[in-house]
Length: 358
Image 1: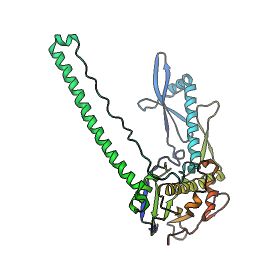
Image 2: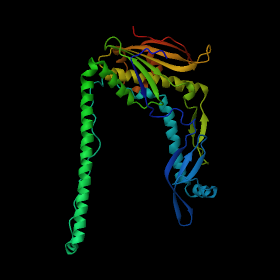
Image 3: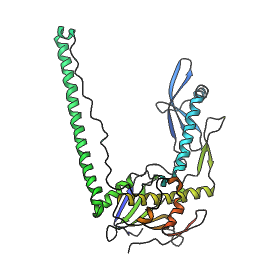
């Protein structure tokens, strides 16, 4: 794409968009079954992209079909319970894709928020006291003293490492406090790093590229977001049959897929706008544009297709009720602002020209 912005960041994925479409097998451990008289084995089960279940020993080797039948016979309730949990987990992940905006921070949540150092210090060893028989055998007493010395030395080294890590954390936390309490008001580098750190906290569904320009002063910002393609979205939900130990995929309708995609890409814009207005208090106007890669029919190569471009000022952004995000429809909410978007009611997008900083 044409390089319009002063910063480019790559955000690592936290959850996958199309896990179910790629046939990733999800192992569910903690299963035990009686295969033969007096024999209890810890097993794992995996579910493929079609919902069929395979069974494995703890070392990862597949079990025989005869043993699989025994597993299903002796551990049916456990398997069914775990498959139901997996079914609910997959469907919840699908639903979350359309509700990214639910975690958008309110613009009032500005300023530095301390983070504690969560690593506990190593436990202090308690020296073992010599028993009566240690005094009868001096060599045993020496071994006990050597063991106490070894445990204390190990603790001393671990505690020094812990102190070093804590000192590093405290220094980084102090630098972050300086950035987020002071630098975000007028220092472009501090603003850029603060925004990056906030965006890194979001569980992006895939590796996401963003370009942003802080403009001529600290009051404006423009952000370009590379959006996923519709083909990257999940195309199925899951059910649990009443009488079979498997999951059943149910293909989403084209209309529902488009609605999911529409809600997802608008939710991304909401999360980015939330990061901007909550972490960069000096910014009064943000311009967020989303594009995806499509085939250019004239050349056969790839080009950027912009789906939306939104110009938002802080005063209007603060009108949204962030205490009730489930009541907010991001597709409709962006119409509160200056908007360029050519989209049908069913979620089909056509090209638009994005806003640019002047």
